[in-house]
Amino acid sequence: MKRFVSGALLFLLSTVLVLAQTKDKPKKEVKKAPAASVAQGQAQFKEKCAVCHWPDKTDKRIGPGMKGVFKRAKLFDERPVNEANVRELILKGGGKMVGFEDSLDAKQVDALIAYLKTL
Image 1 (cartoon, helix red, strand yellow):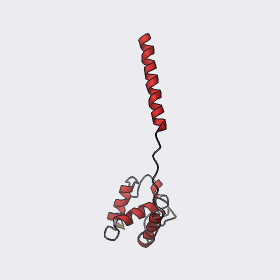
Image 2 (spheres, rainbow, N blue to C red; image 1 turned 180 degrees about the vertical axis):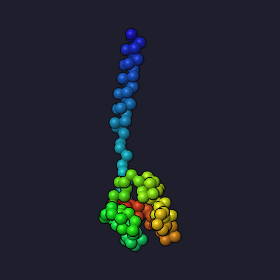
Image 3 (tube, rainbow, N blue to C red; image 1 turned 45 degrees about the horizontal axis):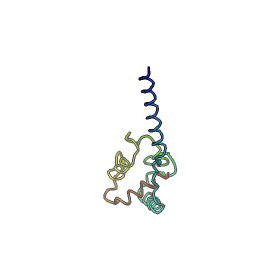
Image 4 (cartoon, helix red, strand yellow; image 1 turned 90 degrees about the vertical axis):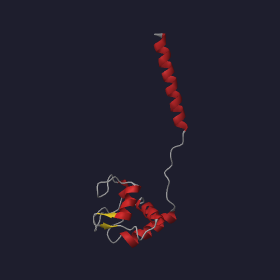
């Protein structure tokens, strides 16, 4: 019985210590894009994307509306919505969408993604 009680106390103490350590750790901050990058992305969207996509609606234009795109679970092609998949879609295209790898550099794509996250 003593062995059980000492084992239980040891477990309880170790659990309290672990919880105390994790409580003091700072939470991971969500990195926000600089306003200039978002503004550049908005300009890229108007120039390259707005012909086919609404920025402020979910309704289909030629392609799907982009409002809340980063809050969705999946892209139109059923891949999960994340930066890597959105970047690949912008660069390579997919479905009826043309890719922009020949007309957008990495910084422009980063800015466009920063803007899409604000929609």
